[in-house]
View (cartoon, helix red, strand yellow):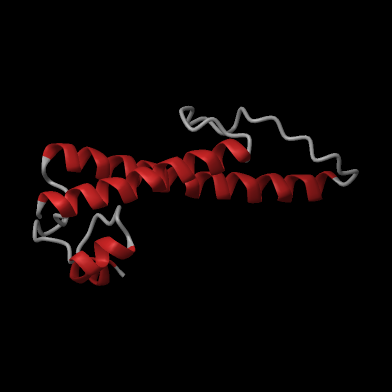
Length: 116
C-alpha cells in the first residue's frame, strides 16, 4: 500500500475513533473503561421492567461502540506496524474498495464470506 493511501486511511480511522469516543461519552460511558456494569442508570421509570429493558438496550449499543473502537484502534496499530490492509486469516491484501467502505476491516471479502 502506498504512503498516500496509508495516510488517507489513517485519517479515516482517526476520524472514526474520535466519533466513536464521542458517542460513548455522549452515552455516559468512559471510552477508556471497559467496565460498563458500573454505569449508573436512572431512567426515572416507575416500571422497573421498562427500566431494565432500556438499560439493556443502552448497554448493547455501548458494547457495539466499544467493539468498533477496538477494531479501529487495532487498525491504527497495524498501520504503525506496516501490516494494515492484510487479511488476518489468509494474509492476502484486503481490497481497497473494502477498506474504503470499512477502514477497520480485518478480513478480506473472501474470508469474510466464508465466515458466514
